[in-house]
Image 1 (cartoon, rainbow, N blue to C red):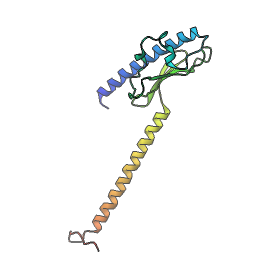
Image 2 (cartoon, rainbow, N blue to C red; image 1 turned 90 degrees about the horizontal axis):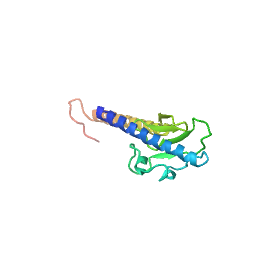
Image 3 (cartoon, rainbow, N blue to C red; image 1 turned 90 degrees about the vertical axis):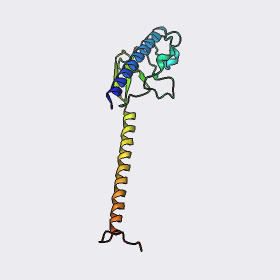
Image 4 (cartoon, rainbow, N blue to C red; image 1 turned 120 degrees about the horizontal axis):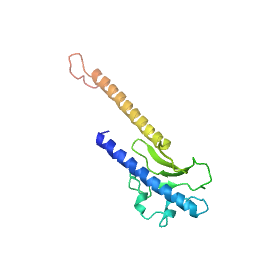
Length: 156
């Protein structure tokens, strides 16, 4: 990966985190007004707790869905380590922003995305090996077709 890509990813990570923290704060305010219950959907935060819907566009979005974060509901009296919010899209290396109900955060590897990447890499390696084996067999066949004088033998 080029250094420019690293800088771009770092900027996207910071933006993703800033937006997620803004949404998490809005979730906390929502819970204050709703007997401690967090919203089940980020759309419930508009317009009273978030004014600008652009905050929901995750910088890692593939452009297919305008909502880049998801809430999981729950209650503010539950354990502090429950996931309150997470980004729906992953970084290039398969991590996503996660905000817990105590508003701590982390960039955590998404095991599903990681497994998909590993499966794709494994399949690509298998195809490369198959191609290599076919090439070796084809070359061996070609060598058999050449007689000792260096001329191609005729097929019978």
